[in-house]
Each structure stands twice: as C-alpha cells, then as structure tokens.
Image (cartoon, rainbow, N blue to C red; front, top):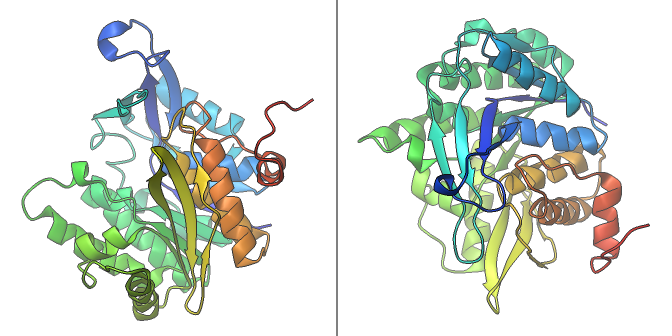
Length: 336
C-alpha cells in the first residue's frame, strides 16, 4: 500500500442524457472530474489512500466539488479555495459511428489555472505522500500551473519520493503559433524528475521530436528504451487501440529499462470512453503500490481500463474484486 497524491485541476462535466446532442435536451448531468480526480477515486476504490492538491473556487460550486471528492474517497487536506470559476466541459456521448464530442469552456480562468506555486504547501504535500502524480495538462493550461507542476516535481524528487508523469498532451490547448516549441521545453524540463511516465510513441516523436517514427515493433521498443535511459526513468506505460474485424480492441504496455510487458488484447464495448486512460494509469499505480509483478500489473491495468469503458461518466469506480472477476470470468454477465 502507498499513499498517492495527485496535482491537477477539478473540472465540471455536463452531459446530456441518453446519447442526446446539446440541441436535443434541456437537461444536463453534472459531475466533478479531471485526470487527478479520476485516477485518485479509482485508486481509492482499489484500496489505496489518496489525496489531491488543487484549488477550487471560493463559492458554492467549490464546496459542492469538494463534497463530491470526499464522497469518492479523496482526502481534502490540500484542497484550497480562491477565485470564482471552475473549468468545465460539455460531453456529448457518441453512439455507433458518431464520436463523443467534448467542448471546453473557461478553463484558463479557473481557480486552479490562476494559482501559482506559492499558493500551495508543496513540501507538506510531498512529505505525506509516497508517490506524486502530475498530469501533463498542467503544463498546457497557464504559466502558473506549469511552474507549480515543475516546482512540485523538483520538490518530490529532491525528497526521494516517486514521481509519476502523464503526458496527456492536448493539441486543443496548444494551437497558437510557436506553442509546441514552448511545450517541448516544459516537458523536457520535468522529465528528469520522474520515475514513471504514461504516454505513447506519438508523444515522443511528435512533441519531443525524440527520434523518427518507428516502422517495426523492434524499432518502437528501442525508441522507448532509449528514452528511458536518457531521462533515467524506470517505467513507461500506455495502451494501444486497434480494430479487429471492426471491433475496437485495447492492449496494455509496460516498459522497463530491461524488459517489455504486454497484456492480452481485449475487445471493447464502449459506453463512455472518457476517463478510461486514467483507469489504466490507476491500475499501473495499483501494481506498484502492491508490489505486483510487472506482467500482473499490466494485465490488471488493462482489464481495469476495459471495465472503465462500460461505466457512464469519467470516474472509474471499479474495485479490485470487480477487476479480478473480469480477468478470470470475462464472459459472466450476472453476479448474485
């Protein structure tokens, strides 16, 4: 067991019911979410103690958000209040060939986005955690969130705590001319302080310009292993999505400096895919916390992500019992 802390924004998700478009409804389902929220709530359901460091608006919306986080098992000790706004997005859930459409609003003016590193007790937070998770979106939001994330990574690394970093690069937040070059430098600055990275080959090639696009599995493995060696990172993890006979599939991948592990490939049934990547990350961190073998870890993480696709909303509410049952009896459709 490990105490795991995350740094990231809390967002308000507004979802039309029953796969409806915004034009078709006067009703929206309200949920509080975000990478850190999704990850930590899932880890809490998997039996790990968790805490979130963030800023919420100093009003009823912030109070409601905090109440929901506590209900999900997230400790509120490092949640502060300032400003008036919470970043939000509309999620029009897709069906069949229609993709899910996400529309963000007011993200860069939220309480979190306007809070500098000095607004947080970084050393106190780090001292209480065994592992710190930092979402790459913090590097894209504002200069304040980017600086706070960098400071947190340095503080945690200096204290000998494990640092987990999720690339989570969002082109929609970095569409201004020259912004990608800025982001590349921010990512390169935080990576030397990390132990575990969630990402993809595309992140390495297109964002960091770390080598050419590999054309074979051997080249891909060599690229990732070179990345691990250069930045002294212990683990690199991610998922591969593909289609087999028009059925979407998911495979989990976990790389160390000396070995590569793949999960079995699962067919997907997608009710709501937002947050499924956070479920995979939570599964990997569960494996580290429980000192599981790498193969068991990636199998568990991928199975957890598969189940997350079947849960409405961002937040994966799976438990270890649920995941293990799916891994051993994937075709069971009724539990009594």
